[in-house]
Image (cartoon, rainbow, N blue to C red; front, side, top):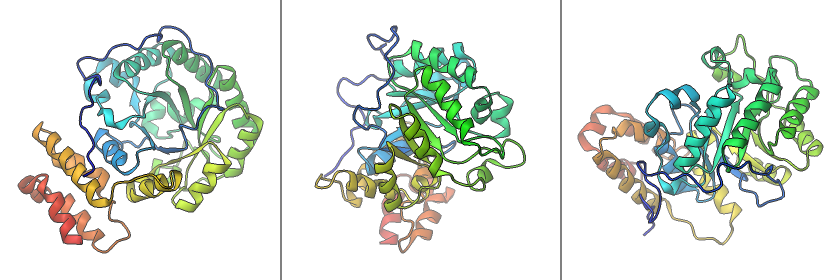
Length: 353
């Protein structure tokens, strides 16, 4: 029976996170010629990719690179660090996405992330929400590439794990390729070698975050041009990817793909992509994944984690199959969640066949 361990021998725990040796020295720029750790990634999504969702995604995909929700520097420096950073060792490889624009604050947070055991520090230069803009970070940072370069240098000075940037292709309605080429070039000079490209513009005024994920046109060709212009960097494609075949195609054309809403609304796509990436490898069947997920939920629920928080990432698991609506309804029902707890998962599974 497939099981995912809740604590691996020798793994650091929340109260005992040692600093990694060598983290005080500046690493060399990451090389895109190394193995392709970014081939399949799950995007940072606010109120979605918390530690519980990431654990579920890991059950489905042993090879995907997982990302936290965006965590602001203020939240880490002035809030409950453990609540924001704790994760299960089974989640590796897992990246910490930071939101901020002050190099010193970002460096402090990156050190915390490395101490907690994260495998990568990612800087958010793609979120267009008005709240994020008021904090002077996210997509609006693309208008200040030299400030972003200072942030990248500070992050790289602070940690030994890879420092990456997630960004858009442009701002508002300017679709000039030169803009993003110059942005990437300045960050490349600062030592960044991994760029996660949401292949559409961010419109800073007049569009909601949801509209910004859908209305600006996708421009995959510009992501390809970036790879051609910066062959020594890795480029991961994000935006509009929802089909297995399309993802596999872009995995070959670029250095990887990052799935957002598709992984949330139809998480089985992660399992299918993982199988295609490793033909012949052994994979757990859905019932084994369910067993492991129920074990995890029971352990977390016993520690006081509310059921509804852990269900957000699994509501789409049955999408496209008979009973999908009933699955979502049962696992979204507060009364059922309170009354049955983790046992509701098995009953819902049996109810939908």
